[in-house]
Amino acid sequence: QAKQLGRSNIQCYSPDMRVNAGKRLTLEGKLRHAAENNELVLHYQPKADLKTGRIVGVEALVRWQNPELGMVSPGVFIPIAEESGLIVPIGDWILRTACTQALAWQQAGFSIPVAVNLSAKQFQSPGIAARVRDTLNATGLDPHYLELELTESMSMGNPEKSIEIMQSFKALGITLTIDDFGTGYSNLSYLQRFPLDKLKLDQSFVRDMADSPEALAISQAVLGVAHSLRLKVVAEGVETAEQLQLLMDNHCDEMQGYYFSRPLPAEQCTQFLQQKQQLSLAPVSPSKVPT
Ligand code: C2E
Ligand code: MG
Ligand code: MG
Ligand code: MG
Image 1: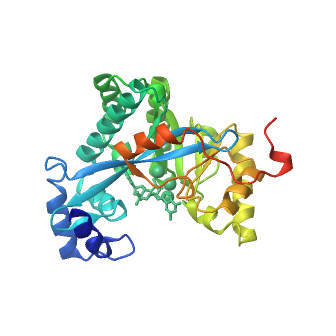
Image 2: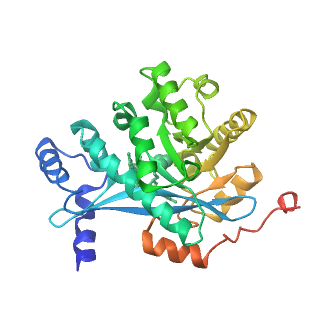
């Protein structure tokens, strides 16, 4: 029933649709009470290592199921949460929930890190590093099992301040990743100045790489730059065996996408971890056979 309701409403609040001012206010009003009404839930999308096929982590992706609105996509409500400032309490809830889940998985024998998306406003909010540290302390999660996904744009305004915040994350032992890499207007020099561990190759390049020589060339360039700076590359939005093969051929490190798994509710993700410890990699080219 709830599922049907959600499905029938998906169309109304997909990210592709422009949300007008009136609708935006309605959404904001309801979003204000979403966390306390238990309308927010995290789904987790597994990530696999492209050499071993093993699951090497999960990314937490927030979902909002409202009784009247149905399922609202994060592409729609995260920007509203950002503009209204609601992203700070919502972001704290997301972080706490993801850390608690990661610890539960560890205690169940699945030692995989959880990646949490940080939006620009959240990253820039006063005391963010201290709040992340407090959340780790409160939940008891080892910081090495937390990864934060940042976007290129969030650090443009004040690079010195951004470096300082990132360094305090690194000092705790947190892994830092740039999400959607290649879509921002970034100055590549920040790659050597920021204390980063990974880049996520944006799904637009992955989607086009099999058909567009340009998208493939950009993906290869990103992989080249990243590897020469000792950064790992995660491909996002992998949907086909052909894309997977191209990524393996080009020495991409990790992958995430519907080809492997959609984002799953925590319980289903636990089952996935139990059943599918390993991804069966697509036909491997001779040069790529693990030695
Ligand atoms: P993102 O962090 O780049 O997440 C990847 C998005 O691509 C997710 O959409 C995911 O469900 C989707 N995806 C994964 N694999 C595939 C695939 O193979 N094909 C296609 N077409 N899509 C795939 P989602 O969950 O709708 O999230 C959209 C964006 O909303 C995220 O992009 C992120 O920027 C933001 N977001 C989601 N959850 C959170 C959160 O907890 N906090 C913050 N600050 N932002 C979030
Ligand atoms: Mg992400
Ligand atoms: Mg992304
Ligand atoms: Mg993306």
